[in-house]
Length: 371
Image (cartoon, rainbow, N blue to C red; front, top):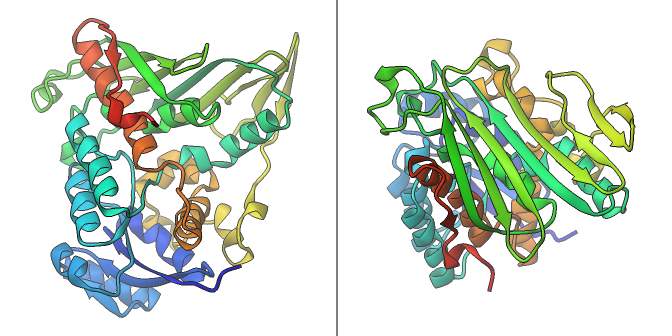
């Protein structure tokens, strides 16, 4: 293993604090700096984890020549501008989902990567969850046979989350269900058609002009005979939190459990079999293997809301860190890179546009497709 160390700065310390000890223990990372506008919280986190370099100004952090890479965990409306600023400041970027909230913002990030030659990775949890890694292993071993169809869903009640979430179109935050249906067959979306259904509370509608309680989208996968379907809901829909991914193959099919903490199902013809999903810590450096099954906080009350609702993102966090850091150390592209992240993110953005236009077909722009 290379002894090279990447100086990482984490920006945003709500969800972002989950990653601090993982970087601290990764053999090729140096948890160099943290950034948070609230000085009190910044110092509390910095003291708790023993981090010396602290910034309340993102602009000042980007001026620090010792920062190699930033990991952005700020509110979604900040992702694009902060990613672009970091790239132009000479920093590699890891950014929590979604990449951006407009197609144009996604384009500008891809262009910034092309201009700078730096690395961008959207830190999409589902494609590094133990469930996805299990399905991926089955597929690569040939046990699923030919993939015939893929389905993803992400249903979540966002009441009580920060105000910018209120009334958000469901597909604007669709990466958790879009990413697995593209990642497993290593495909890109060519075009989408989406329908909205139902209606959210009237007071939630004006902020984004979106009335739909649920949006469901069909995706045509480019240069394949496959299509996929994804479903999203955020408000006024009675459903336990669920990030799910089903794949239907010619030999075996996998269906994600309908109820959290129950077992998923493998279908072989007429015979269903409940399956216990194994952990995939063995794929990681030994120093960070423990983080697939544990959070970083000591007190239950400190657990981030995404963990309470999302059951820890399937042990994905150390896999995400390792993918980003190892890509930088080895000079390769991570998954998903900037172009792939744009394809995944723009599926959701264009799906909402399609729903608002009654299901009109929307093509993914060229900058989201590999050459």
